[in-house]
Amino acid sequence: MKVTVIGNGVSRAPIPLHQIRGLTVGCNAVYRDYTPNYLCVVDHAITKEIHESDYQGVVYYRHMTLRRLNLRQKINWYTPHFMNSDNTGNSSILLAKDLGAEEIDLIGFDGVEQKLYPDTMQPNDKFAMWNERLMYVCKDVAVRRVVDSTCAAMNISSISVDDYIKELNENYSNR
Image (tube, rainbow, N blue to C red; front, side, top):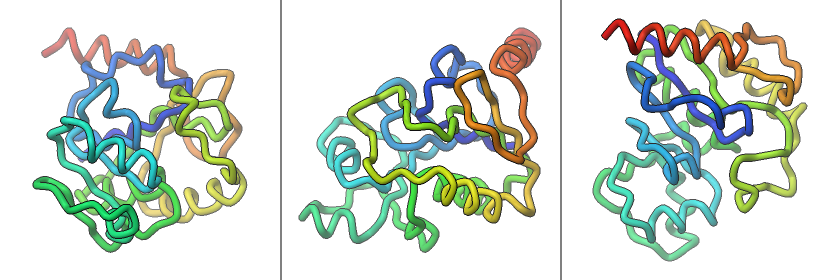
């Protein structure tokens, strides 16, 4: 089974998310533009934002985050053990694996500081450390990263944004 994990890097902007078939796992602020099957949140500010919004989708979050923010768990909000990871991207991939993914497409995993939602920037993002953990998390799953010229280099199989959009369009028109 393939699961598409949707991050918030700028390379995600041109991708028609509504054309993605199969299970989707979104990260943080993606909920502003798209409702994935599952949404993972780690950051306190975005967790509070989602909690205060009218978002009705399934949310996976860190237990301690709600506690620290003095918020109550909502219906469709879950806190599995792997959400104690240190970032949303890795937690989302772990969720995809937990769902039984044999293949994972990563969209918007640019590995650079520039984000689609500048208000979600983290001052201590450390790409090298994130990349190392990502490689460990992905070691037993076929991972493909959708990239453009803004993306940092990684040792993961990749497909260009343009080729990915063509693939989506072909699959979407063959429905």
